Length: 102
Figure (tube, rainbow, N blue to C red):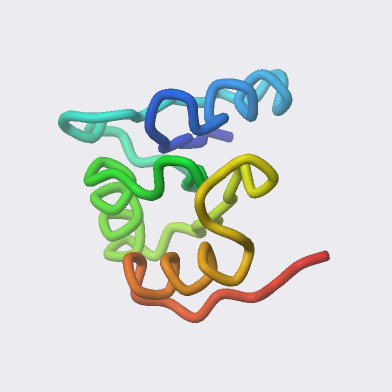
């Protein structure tokens, strides 16, 4: 399984990639997207930094190809945005209704 992990530096994307273990993960922070499409796209958004253009580009590219996508937000305890603000930002930036998973 190939995975795109998309997030700005300090978002937690690298840590998430390490936690996933043996999955072939490509960390995307900026610039052009890889040519080979993933099996799944994981967008990591930090409450401290929000979403980056690379994150939204990856999200919409995968949407065009009907590739499953997940949005994970981090740093809720230390960031400038709380859970509700991050959900609203995700809906606005990613143009999608979000579902809360506890």
